[in-house]
Length: 322
Image (cartoon, rainbow, N blue to C red; front, side):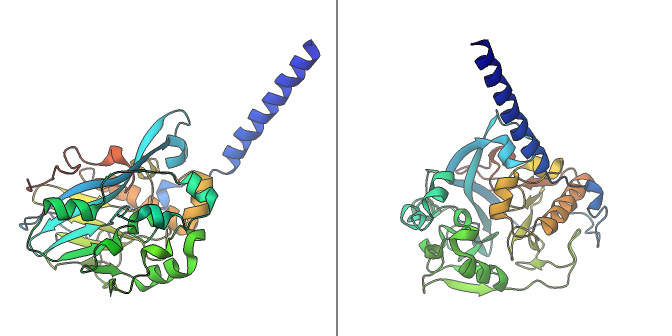
């Protein structure tokens, strides 16, 4: 009996050791010094007289171990991850930065193989289209959708808004159409002929560390920037109000700690969802340095509910909207 118990303990120790070794060997450390330590073009004092406000609407939610969100996190601490739409009320439009999951997500989700459906479980909340139809939070303005990228949990509501323009880079739409479910896209979310795609390109106007940018309304309130590595055409959004500046970073990381440390997602996760880890870690290091340069900047990764500003969960609004 003692020999059997000893053999069991040895086997258990070897198993634990192998698991820890695998975790260590799959780590991909990011050197913070690789990031840009100064802006390519100083932006001066940030602020705007434009009355712009935003609210973050979780359309679905899930919990996951912190270690999945960023390397070095705890496997024993659960974190809330939301699939959200950011509603932005601007004098010229109602903008959705991402749509989260839409009305038809349960049918769309069946396109994934069984393993993906088991791994990517979600608890459905309210679709953005239902909220806008019921509450009309920013009336009498056209609707513009700007996806940070077209993965299933960001583009699920696009077909719910047939009258909206959908701003996208050609490279992102091409990857979504050819990469399909193997790369985290659901063709059923982006195949409707009614979708009004609005292809755009960046101008050679530097903003912070980015050599290119796009001022959506030419008033400094909404600045799009290219964010490399996650998908072929991922974008981030700087939103500037009279009181603060926010940076919505999509899925470049899944947590604010990913930028603060800096750190990648867990290896198994990034192997599935991240297109180019080398480009991605440079992007993460760049944002890390930006946070050091501007500690007042509010950085908001798409899924990190803990990073959402207090009071910004819908129906709350930040900076002016009731």
